[in-house]
Every structure is written in structure tokens, then in C-alpha cells.
Length: 131
Image 1 (tube, one colour):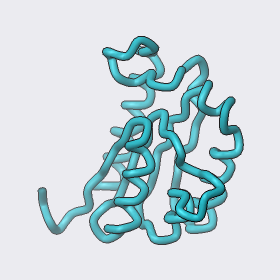
Image 2 (cartoon, rainbow, N blue to C red):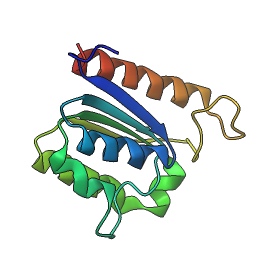
Image 3 (cartoon, rainbow, N blue to C red):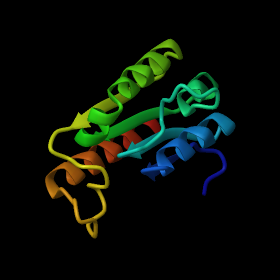
């Protein structure tokens, strides 16, 4: 890994919050992050990952499963507000018809069309933010 360039990170499910914590811990190294059907991204707890956004310098993609959004509809709003306040770009989208775990091809709820869309969005983000 080139030490003079920023890197991107991605996480699935509980890996989503880990990418955010890493981006906050290493803002000079992490320039982009992606969370696919992430869980626990914006909670009411004092250690919620969304509260780490002010420490970040990374641009983000949050690809949210439709059924996750139904369970935690306020999470996307908290994320949008946190990134807007930090003046950091973040694409936060609910993927229609996608169920939690839809991205890995070996998942029982794999949604190829939505998984390919999310992957393409991540590659576009990394191409822009890490150039």
C-alpha cells in the first residue's frame, strides 16, 4: 500500500461501523468508505459510529437494505445530518427490494442487480475520492 496515498475501506453488516471507526481513527489515511447493509451505524448510544463523523476526512457510500431501513428508518437521517454537518460527501441510499445481506453472491437473499449497483457505486466513489 502506498503510504503517500489515502485508502478506501468497505464493510458488510457489522463491518460498516468498523469502517467508520477506522476512518475516524485514521483520517489522514482513509479517504473513502463503503457500508453495505450495515447495522448499528446510527444509534442513540454515546459510542454510535455516526458520532465519529466529525473526526473523519473520508467520503462515504451507505447502501442500505430496504428491510433494514424499515427497522431503523431514522438511521439514514442521522447519517445524512452527521455528514452534512462535517461537510463530507456521503451517498446514502435505500436499495429497493434488497434484504439484509443482499450483496454476497452466496447469500440466500442475494440480489444481483442491486449488488452490482452498490459495487459500481463503491468503485465510482473510490475512483473519485482516492484519485
